[in-house]
Image (tube, rainbow, N blue to C red; front, top):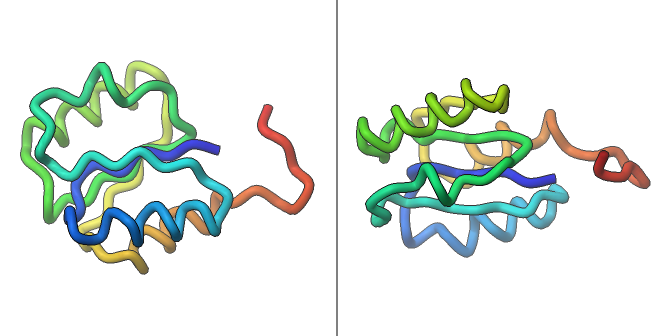
Length: 100
């Protein structure tokens, strides 16, 4: 499974990717240093937006991208690793499950 995290903190990048890997996700992280993310998001299984650490423009791009492609969008105010884990755990693959 693939997920996109928009927002968050640069210093937690390694922790975000480690937790995602543990839960069976491939994670793309956009922490706000990027100018435009709409072409880089791709077709993930879920988009997670840390509303406390993201620009209004990036948040709007995420909304439009998710709505146009029917991608689930999770909004979380916290940018901590535990908040990311809480968003991803319900979407975890069961052991032996394959990507469709």
